[in-house]
Image (cartoon, rainbow, N blue to C red):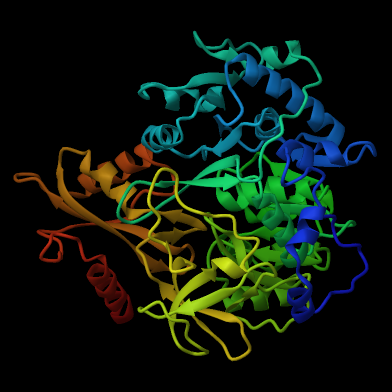
Length: 555
């Protein structure tokens, strides 16, 4: 499970696939997958004893702090004691509604130490989005700060709240003053052992025909997270690694916190907002050699110009991209202006990363391709009848369950899982194999919108709009955008007697922004008389998308 030595050598992809054995991956854990594991031990305790850095943190005001694995072990022990005293039991769910701070890491590790599961809540979520996730998971306790505490007011049956206070602040009635409670808690707490299939995280993923679905992540997912960091990111002992993704989302939680720590490698968290300038500042200040993020962030760096990036040219060893397809022009720009390879990686909340252009394995890399199945997975392309098809035949990307020992997803929380059938997990993405065995994307099978690296379910936005008294019907789609990949566009049918004015359009946008999150509101909005629907009443979003694409082509 350790990082690859900083030797510069790369095993061949074909050899890695041939030699992969799940037994070897399991042997990299300290715990026993059959008799007991603890995620905090795997990500923290077992790396103690050498006073190594585990966390580098830049605060919003620019302060820089480092935390060793020993520091995180003590913080997690105190947090676990606070959670236990608040009534949290092994198997319960603890949510974190926190910015990128050490308190967030302590919450994650403390929940795991107690044998509880961690649930991320993105700080840009509004009350509606938070309430649904808390209800879905039957969350027992929420850790937040005073900046986000107000979002929990008015949530029906809100769980117990522990709040991180600033100096001079007081906790609301009934809340736990987290720092005071942790200061009074013991510095040691025996890790609670859990089974390989016991819950470690409770994630959520957006869909098109319903509210976000709960995605249970079991303990054995640690094997897959470690494999991605080793083979695709190529995390080495001498690297300084920074994944700029927010831990409120899957890529950040899986691979900005869990992935590096399970390999005993330090991670970086920056509390402040992201800009091209701040990216370069942090890379230069901390000596980052391995960078991960989304194409949206990398396009922002490109837009800032070569002169902004010039001071870090040659410093980065590798860059990993995930969240949406990587544009070929980004690859060329990084090569020319930063002198670093940037590789596209593909995954889902349900899977983690499964198809990659691996930095750590030797294979051809073709611009526009997502790469090859990670060792430990076998992927296939299925036609509409569920049959595997060959090169250059479009179909749905699927994971062969029986031949993918690293696959951990078995179904959504408390729901049937139609995506799993006939021995395959179907991703819902349209792809085709190239003759060399790599995967190329054609488009999306579903209606999920990808904007600035975020996956947005139209149903959430539509539901928020329908709460407004002026709206009687609505459809939401993603339309192509050169900067954000897609933007959210809403087609709104108004109530009788209501006029579709620019002022109402702005009011509706702000309504969604306040109810959901800053990235999910419709940047474009049209008032329409009716919506295209099937005879059974289902909105035909593809008709709206086609019209928008044609309109852009004619512009």
